[in-house]
Figure (cartoon, rainbow, N blue to C red):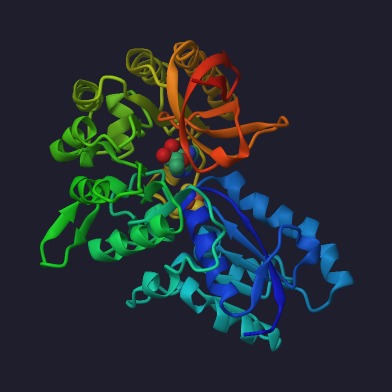
Amino acid sequence: MGSDKKVFIKTYGCQMNVYDSERMAANLAAQGYAEVSAPEEADVILLNTCHIREKAAEKVYSELGRLKPLKEVKPDLKFGVAGCVAQAEGQEIINRAPLVDLVVGPQAYQNLPEMLKRADNGAKVIDTEFPVEDKFEKLANHAGMKSAPTAFVTVQEGCDKFCAFCVVPYTRGAEVSRPATQVLTEVKQLVARGVREVTLLGQNVNAYHGEALDGSTWGLARLIRELADYDGLDRIRFTTSHPLDMDDDLIAAHGEVKKLMPYLHLPVQSGSDKILKRMARKHTRDEYFRIIDKMRDARPDLALSGDFIVGFPEESDQDFEDTMDLVRRVEYAQAYSFKYSERPGTPAVDREQVPEDVKGARLMELQDLLTKQQKAFQQGLVGKTLDVLFEKHGREEGQLTGRSEYLLPVHAMAPQEMKGQIASVKIDVNHRNSLGGTLA
Ligand code: 5AD
Ligand code: SF4
């Protein structure tokens, strides 16, 4: 304690990285490190990285290059690389960027304070082990955390699905669920700190199978039902799900649990059976449609989100058309789409690649359709009244911004005291990625 050092953390990639960065910051705060929002003020710069696509890793090296001059001004400045690039590349990071002092993989964050001490003594420190101890026991510390009405809680990590394009099973390791009681305790602490909405996180969150106190195993639906009983907790979300694990109990929960928000991120990646098979997704397009139908029967106002990859090896024009057709049928409220990117060590690397210009053209066509669908979804909300959990100041004076049930940001003129509250807002305008409204 009492070292009054400062740490700057920059986070890339998914929400689990956001959660991990918050945990690292809290863990380091207990060692006397204050978090700062400018790299120039820091004694330690930590990049929490993403390895999911090629560009994501390249961004880290260019960021290190940009930050390098700071070390000339402050020779004692330490650089750390955390996250999935750290896990995947290990020592290679220090070879390529010798200014890096410390490389820490996602399963070793509990060791960070001790690693920093060694780095302060001039050592280069690398830890990319997958330890057997429970890292969350040490990391799930919310004391000293900034207060906010929403929070992420990791309930499951890693993946055993081994989709042919994906690095996650290698960077995050095998699928592990946190014990249900540990999750419940963490959420209780968050609610006591004023959190009203939690998003349960996992690379395969709907495969959650956590041990309960009585030794039984709880699925995600059971965990959600239990959390729904907490006074003060008003909203529950979860992400990201795999279609195969959308079981009937979880589908039914969407109709029965009022606090579970009517929004589902359910990536399908492709609408072609041939490509789904080559991706090793383990389901067909018809099976995906059936899940969507059941979800919409359970919760008619459900908004859907998805992930798509175009240009996976051997994707023909017809396969791509099948994806466009699937999107037209499902009608997404929002979606992410990517060009296939070859990831080292994954099964799809050695296959026949689709030319870059074809990938580019397909991505544009798909994004055009998805953007139209998003616009239509948002336009359909104009005139309706939505529940908005106000989180922060809006861009304009006197304005607050929050999220609706459908995760879409909503701005409205509202008194500052309403921060952290849920209010009814009548939607007046549809902006590109948000809505504007008036307190109802
Ligand atoms: N290339 C392109 N997109 C990928 N994704 C995962 N791996 C790759 C890859 N190699 C996308 C998937 C996934 C999202 C998180 O990132 O759509 O759902
Ligand atoms: Fe990126 Fe996946 Fe790692 Fe998240 S888990 S940071 S998406 S590679």
